[in-house]
Length: 400
Image 1 (tube, rainbow, N blue to C red):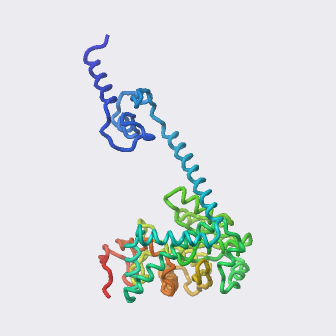
Image 2: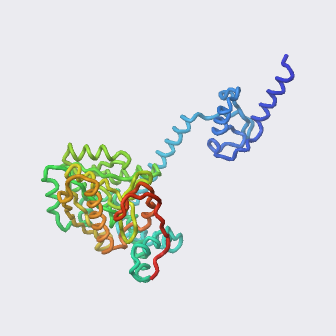
């Protein structure tokens, strides 16, 4: 026979388990409110409950006993659903990419109308970036840059999709190089080189064109920032790497790139206008009339390995037509390796990119928050030195 106090204790525990939880967090597989959640399981463990979790059962909608799913099963199910979603998106992308360019550009017109006039996709971010970058231009000129940018962004979206199945001959007709002898120089120099580009024009077409030019003669790598969406990440890897380009995430780039530049004869591609990581010590310089955090890793790699940098200056001459000019930067004039030379070489790269943007501003990616980072203690600001305390900034539009 059970003692009365022990019976009351067990009944109280049973009542607590069968009562609806006050926790409003996510439930397992959209289960009813009475199904035990992982958070409740962890709370029971944290409180060192004597109940055995393997025997926990709570009634569902139909009164049937339901078992708490293990994290391994949920992870496996999530991975299976992601694979299914990826192959569906990939199949849809390949089907759309088979359409001719004139049909894709009609789709682009619809995307522009929806993004600019209906949903107003990042209109405030774009306009603030343009206003701060071109304070000396009139209101009408900045509005024209904004509208042309959204048209270019819509074209860029359909061109990226088209790149999933675009052939080599078709790509060469749409991307022309003004000085093709520079490619011969890169392949015949017998040492590694650094290719610097930016979000100017169609950088996806540029990556694929470089793969066609170098082919199997010179291995090519590209440093990129991983996307948070796993489906988009796999799709980008498929489109960029289908001709042999090897992608290196920025988080693991330091050792791999340094080893490749020293031990191989290869080409490593960087984007010059990406924001550095928030947690590290950054270098700030003037870029488009604003104090901007910039990467110094390109200059570090070039000076450490004495590799030349070739900047790919891309221009849009017509809808779906681009021209590229390779500009060689003199690395030897910034040797030897030192912090001062690293900052000077970085400033030289930034000014080269700034000049290219000012000549055709509507084809640069204005929709990303390029100036979200502000100087913090420990950062280095060009012309001021190391920051001892946070620099006050004013997020106001420039007055005309």
